[in-house]
Image 1 (cartoon, one colour):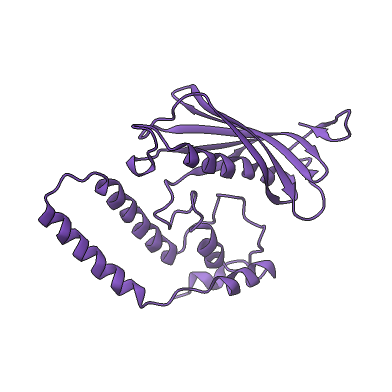
Image 2 (tube, helix red, strand yellow):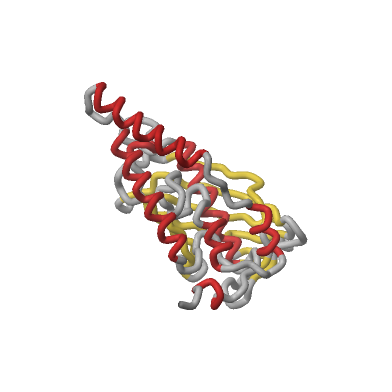
Length: 243
């Protein structure tokens, strides 16, 4: 039997778009199944209506599993990043990083998950959040909204040359974002100016806008530049590029 990893091409650190991992390996499929089960457990445990004996029974079983896992080794992250930075990473290396990202990773129970993808010059996203993400009754916590918006808008960098980090992020909460309903998301670049990328984003539920945002990303090395195949723009009076 041929190891599927031996037939994979090599990956570099920036070869894979944000939130869009390559097809899963059998190992990653198993990790995703574990995460999906843990998400379901977490959702059911919120205000679980059970008697004390049942709750203590669950606590004992979960503690036994936690103790079993505590003695097992963990893959070291540094060698994975070194291989990816050298352009010598495997598909499993990419998945070991991307599948555990906090909101988009399919192998972490922390993720709703949040799906993000490119649609022409627009970044689109969607997620449905359950009871464990609650802030006000029946609504998603505002801090969680900010985290998802940051990830959504950061993906606009897949449309340009350059990569950086969030400089500022300003949100306007126009309505409560409900739990257990699909949140539709969109973001786009509005301006490039040297090391700065300016973007705007929006969340909607059933066609109603619940949150809008504006943000600035700062390129980590050099300046942002347009990708002609993706983004077209004209020079602004200030010398940047308006998109």
